[in-house]
Image 1 (cartoon, one colour):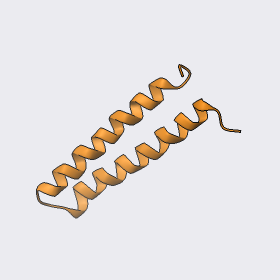
Image 2: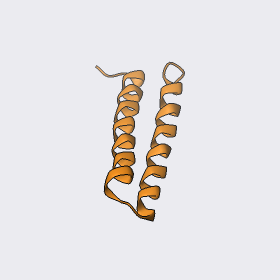
Image 3: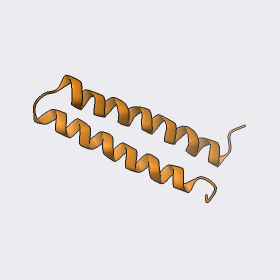
Image 4: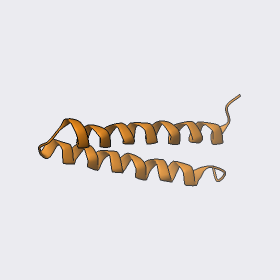
Length: 59
């Protein structure tokens, strides 16, 4: 059974994967201004994943 900490752990893992994917899209696929946007959103996903990781054990 999944408790709150397990859900936050999975959410953190998924957000890290999506963040890496967005940064990879920005770095390798788009060479114009859109690449900077993808990379910025990927870093934002990392920040939210960091918050989810910090919330484990406190919720």
